[in-house]
Image (cartoon, rainbow, N blue to C red; front, side, top):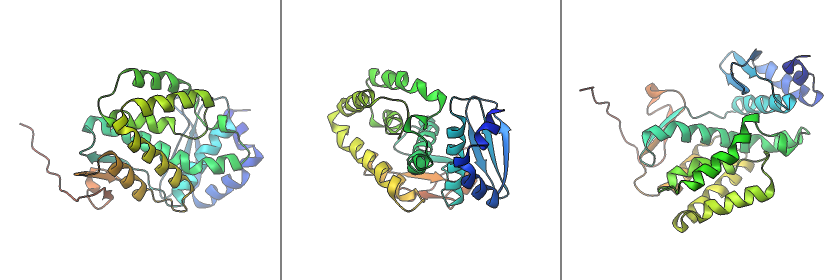
Length: 247
């Protein structure tokens, strides 16, 4: 039995599969990478699958992510910000999107009968070495530690409680001036996880204003650069963008 056939035959997923299929044509494709992925448009939903330790759990996560979008969650596609160097924005947005969605679907994942340690990708085994590397570099700005700190806050996963606490304490000790900001961001994720809304706009605004409370010129878009400014949202002050011609 193939990976995807084994996952689809799991009775815990029958209702969720049916719900998605009633709203979109659902296709399954073999992934070109080691990751499971999902995408959604007006007509169809696609899940790309790969070999992994827990295929049913992996499928559950992708179905829950599709369901989240069908209920109104809009992934952030791009952004510009005075808080981050522009070359750091894609990484920040990728982690922000990923963790907002993980926090939102985690309780439903557990309610399906899966375990916390199954709520991860096989590649997440690299998280500990990455976090160690970040913490050893002595980051000079808070923006450098926000993405890895958000990764640490992800629910579930394979980190032991002791390992999590060790990383958590080390993040909070990096710079006493940043401790309150990190704790605020942690609470914002907790609040988002249990909020009834699936519109992350206000949560993202609060996260960004926690990072840079004053003079925060940031905009996040749901489509592409042609959607500026209407297909997205400003964090604080509205602004315009002028593209300078190449010299």
